[in-house]
Length: 446
Image 1 (spheres, rainbow, N blue to C red):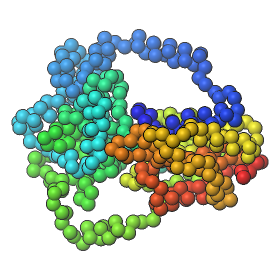
Image 2: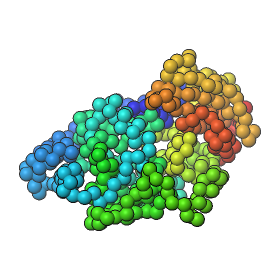
Image 3: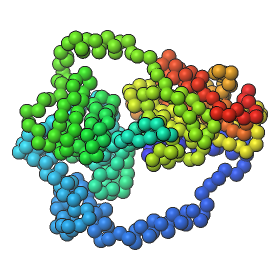
Image 4: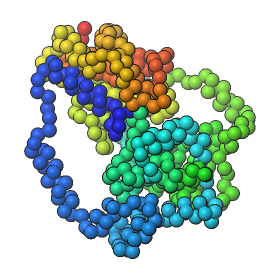
């Protein structure tokens, strides 16, 4: 996807551009608000101690830098983090020197082609080794159990990727925060008892909020350095991994040999040939006036979610939790303030399409403002194939569907990694067919 931004923000901006054709005066941040933010940032900078400033400059992959910091601030606020980073570096150095046997190794081959894709992307961008954490934790959305997951900086925010600048994170073409893949990098997982599927292949799990750390060693693989947890490979039982575990711990399945066929594995193979039908969860877009069904195998973020960064018009973001072509669905409601008629809706759709004015090497307009009908409601369809962030010939596809009722435009955007097929069409059809207004406005869409 686009660098450092989720594509839903791009679509949101395009929708705002479309709305500007219908009416004038979109809300923008006021100068007073910006001044207040600047004042708060300045105050935060003034509160930093000499230790804080020194810690911000430490590259936590640089052992001499860590040792110098600990010598200067042996009992400081950041001394514990510095000591942990130092221990990780010393452990990795001992493994490289054959002074310490790796307790557990995840082969790079087990992470699939995606790992190599991330590695090539990082190298193309000039990124070197880095440190990054992934987390998952239980939460609630609109009173229902849900899962919150994402990335976290570890130790100093200055160098999640060495040499990349403060707080830099590299995103791939699909909007995923890329794990640092270069030799010497460190990756951590904190899952609070939840399964975390890394690259859709290997599942990591920690029982609590203490991370499990792995180091990237090119000649070996993703090597366990510190912490406790479970690692599960496809078609294999979970393996307990702990810092005190024996070097004879059960290894992951050999990737160049077929897995043994048992009654259980044979039945799983049959089940894989005949996948279970998709199931859906009913979602109420509180404050946005509509409900719909979303695939159960996904995570729903909404304005009530922690760290929500969408604007007030955005109603939800659904992200897939299983490997498949559909990876994100977003929904929003844009209120005009006046009753919308068919001519205003047509202007809105034309304004949205105008963001792709002509065919180019960056994108292809597959469908331009086609009217389709689901459950007696008419939608406007725009389909785009986006090559702007493509890697190795890959592309991102999205379908933008808009309708209107009362004083509002409603837009659902579906993002997927392959051209429309039966599976993708099934998801789109199910979501659109389930769409319903909580209270029908005075003017129904045509």
